[in-house]
Length: 244
Image (cartoon, rainbow, N blue to C red):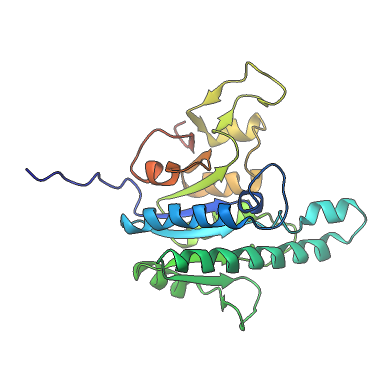
């Protein structure tokens, strides 16, 4: 008797990966090749199940604009440097994904034609429809906007079914679990509560943009199998939506 494949809950997703996730965590810097390969293998498994994958990658493992600005550097200048750091991560992730058998395109909000395509919305959608993974680099191309906001923007533009943020924590807590041992993880939360209670984990501008456009957000730990589990509707992490 034939067994049917589990049904995908999400057909097209935008996944936000922090730069620190590629460094192996622990607040590290640079790119850890073991972590990079494991991440690519995980994404390849998800892509093979039929999910159309778009990725937004941060650059904090190489350079963080806010940190530079706090040390006296011009904020806009430091943010542009951070955008270039995301391009480095995107190229590394593209190489790892292609080694894992996933055709991948890097599209940048800043023009760097020698190494990546300029971001064009309709072209990005065509890449996804053809089964290619697409990595969006250089944020929105504007200073003062985080890569979380870039991920929310791209999720809307790609008409994605959801925005995923893979982090170092299990989900969103009602208070900082590092300072409050009795903090409770929330399975569901509304956009309004997230913003009113300053729950962190994701930039408030990004959450506001998702609220205005009804884009569901899923926040979960970057652990083996979690991305695939979320795509198949398993209860992993925290969902941020209108209903909560």
